[in-house]
Image (cartoon, rainbow, N blue to C red; front, side):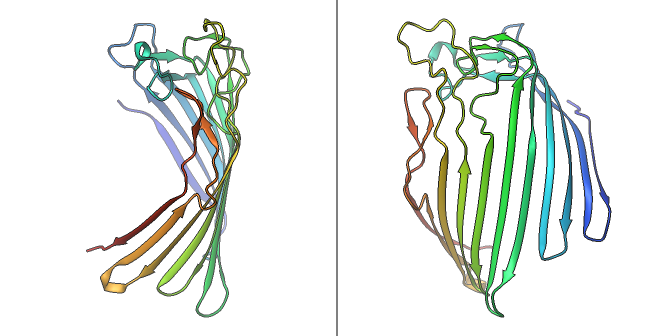
Length: 258
């Protein structure tokens, strides 16, 4: 399969420039699917700018994904219905668009210590372009303008650290806004069934801590604590009820390269 695409970067100054890209997206259908299941096709556009002077790295990119047909499949985690496992569904025309911004710097505290930090923010919106009556449990009866499920509007990541010649430590904050569990109205559900219509996941803020020490020719030791504050958020209610985020987890390891 040959998928056309073009991208480029135009340098405006020694430290700054603009970038662009247009790419064709394609996902084939499984041979065992019904004949009415179409392949997924999209045209993906991006345009933005980049600045890097050696101390500050800043980039902002807008994107627009134009799906002529969005395709989804039923898995154990997304449906939980054995009769529909691996079945694919047409979603029709869908637009996904937004902007992503990144900033990274390293601030020298002294001759021995640096404080690196970075910031990434992504804003995403999505819209079905046509009305749709789908048997896919995450879509249902969709009206034009409805947004996709499990796609957050806002994602934010901030990391700050302290680094010396042979060691470093980092504190990472990750925020994800709430997400719809169903795009539209659930149709054909049994009376009293929990269809998740109008239900959203929790917005979440997770803090991770990591550190490493360089042993030179003998490798590197590292450790991290995921979900430092042991917060619990509902990240999904599929397929069999509320599913929490990962609990606090401790990891220690050793890495050697040769």
